[in-house]
Length: 426
Ligand code: AMP
Ligand code: GLY
Image (tube, rainbow, N blue to C red; front, side):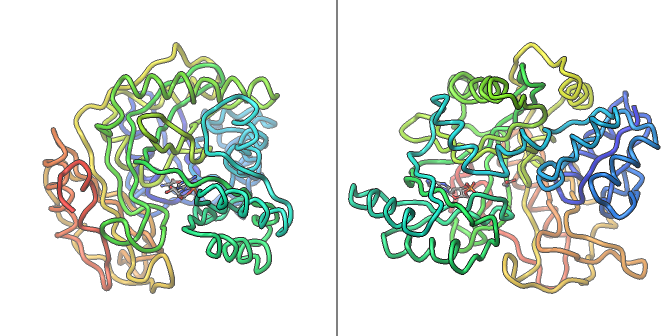
């Protein structure tokens, strides 16, 4: 199979690394890619990089499967463009991608179909939002203010009291810090409990559930400070045992794909459910229409079986029957970021250490890297994902640590406590 991956981050590097191991692969391409992905795939520029340019390139180059990494091309309809050209694609079409691109769509879908999620109100105006906040807080509840549209993972503002919530609404709806993504907001009850990310491959009917993972969103150790795209992850998640995972399939994943089909937008691709476990019961915090990042950098290294046939079957509508993929060992990914991220940071810093063999069970995924004058340099906020793979979390963490300690760049920052919930350290 000739496969094209769309994207340029750590998630796409993890996908390229995994697909490159498939005996079914004849040639791997990636657009636009990054230098790490370049070790597994031919990097190509498809016209100006628009979704229709990429679809044209895939058609002209006889691609058998396009695997889309990020949400933006999916929300822009890359799958629709590929369907029009008869090119198989792993990922939902534009209508189905609304499960991520519109929080209002996702919440109302869950409401109509009895899928457990936090209580919420959709608000089109500031005064409606103020009223919703008054209602929740008068019941002693805290709220989360969410912009409806895509906001690079920053659109949810968790608040502690009424004033903070009102201020959040003003920032989103009046100051428009997320632009038109904040034209509407969802005001929802703040839930409490551990979170987990579930990645399930689906063809619209059947589900293959990958090992659960746990992201670490805040920038600071001990989960403090600003939220980021994710500073590290591990997989599997001991909290999500077989019985809980089966309940998640039964009460959340299956009802969601059934609901999407019933509503005329059958869902194909990765259904990412971001869940909170509240007193033992799973609730949906968000859906994403793609693989998680950095979750994929921890989940794929513990998947033993070939991923390529699963992606192809999902694209073609013949994935099945439903099943759960068990993790083979454990993996823990530490994200090395540019100092200052998620606010402003510098780029163009020389990255040292990757030329050496870092040791057994260590895989480095590139995210924000570039080649400049023959040198590997930083080119983004999240620069590298260093994944340790081992028999248990202690070994995986030791290996990730062994990896990060051999890599350096100016102002490199990473959390030293990734996995603290399973390692018993803070
Ligand atoms: P989202 O962009 O919806 O994934 O939200 C980002 C983060 O905000 C989540 O990972 C949670 O930590 C937090 N969050 C979102 N919604 C809620 C909620 N209803 N209750 C508590 N925390 C939430
Ligand atoms: N790590 C969170 C996400 O991929 O949305």
